[in-house]
Image 1 (spheres, rainbow, N blue to C red):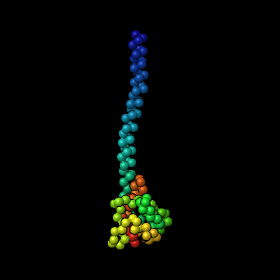
Image 2 (spheres, rainbow, N blue to C red):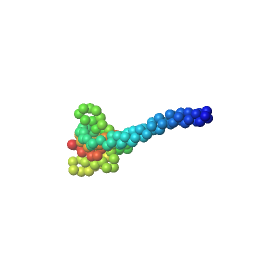
Image 3 (cartoon, rainbow, N blue to C red):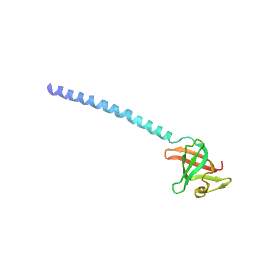
Image 4 (tube, rainbow, N blue to C red):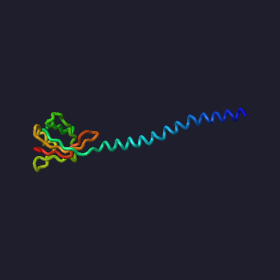
Length: 124
């Protein structure tokens, strides 16, 4: 009788420890899925446009810095898909180095890696 009672007590103790641990693992997995979905949604912000003057062009780092009238500079990441135009002509990032202090309008998408320029219009 004592052996059966101690086995029952051991089983009950094991269940008392195992059930909360199992329950704790269940909701955490669901929370992680929601957090991943939320993080993915936050990495896709809508495109924006900013106008200002070019203060720096660095072709090696594929970077253009634009300073709007507010005075707060924006670092723009330039990719191979970025369309750079001066008037009606398409120009390269290297050509843009000659346009420091000129006014530009930049259409960009905020991303986790930075503001990615979709298009740069000189004189816009």
